[in-house]
Image (cartoon, rainbow, N blue to C red; front, side):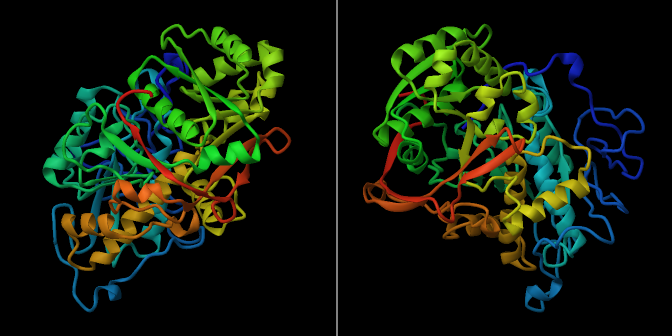
Length: 495
């Protein structure tokens, strides 16, 4: 589900990261930049992941892991895993020793540098640690990022740069507001793995595998009216049964991506048997106070928003200014876009709303280090991006996306090709993400009739703790599960 657009910070606040003097720039792309400021960097804001004693090379923005100490090794494989066959240049972007992987995230436009970029950091940390431990079947990953400014034209430019100049073998952990270049990747048959389904693009093409992993249509054509996707309502069932919510108010912008996110929420709760009311606000001049007043009158006890962080801040202000509704509200449920380590700072002026803020999804809470893989992720993030404060659920999902790609590429051995990776992604029964995702994530198509029978599905949910000043796990896929039936929902407009 998407956070809709809206200015988060003033333009003057959008300061770029700075060049890391230990990082080198390749030709034909963005200069490699890092978290230790020395001089201004042309273009983008994303640093290159670099360990304490790193050597960055292999292209613009390429990831190279540091030598010496660090987090527990990311699972990798050596050249011995190729069945005795020597690596060779098996496809575009693949050599005997390297694999070129690209990434595009939206950093500009009205969104600010923190709305869509967290996915890059998690994937970059994973690949840096992977390279430190030998890469994939003896090949190192050159991970190149080209952030766009949020426009169709710039997205197409960055996608073409990755494909035509950098010769990318695959894309991993994309997080793109306007994915205008998707058709070019489909034309080139290039895998796109673990991207965020901000819009319906990931339901269209057979080479694209979103991070939600849920029964994509893969029709090869634009999603039209009445096009359906299928899912289960375990998340809505959790809040209905565990938090005893009875009436959900869905707040969203009059903007297509926000409406798309709202549509998922609406369908989820309706099919769980929970009453749903909708409250659309104007993107440019949202009247959240009016929406809150109406929710009070309607008896809403769970507020689910499909807005950006700027909208969440204003919505929480309106909630706290209406004390009667704040007392009535049991849960403020934000999209995953707000599942950020800095939410306590962002909502510090509205602590009552903050304390009732939840988020849910298909992956474990990125701050729950009781899980060994989450602990490994956090350690790597601190090592490779020590100055990046916006560690996020999307950062963890970038890490997971990188692990999916690694698993698929590893399966191909020396003969690493686009088709091999795509076939693996389409036929793997599940992608557990080393125990941090729900166990049924799969891209294998299921007939609509499958959803008519109840199956066991599990939930991940977290709540912001005022006392701990972080997200705490309230539901874990290892223990919070329900028998639920699935349903189809329209992709084009809210129900």
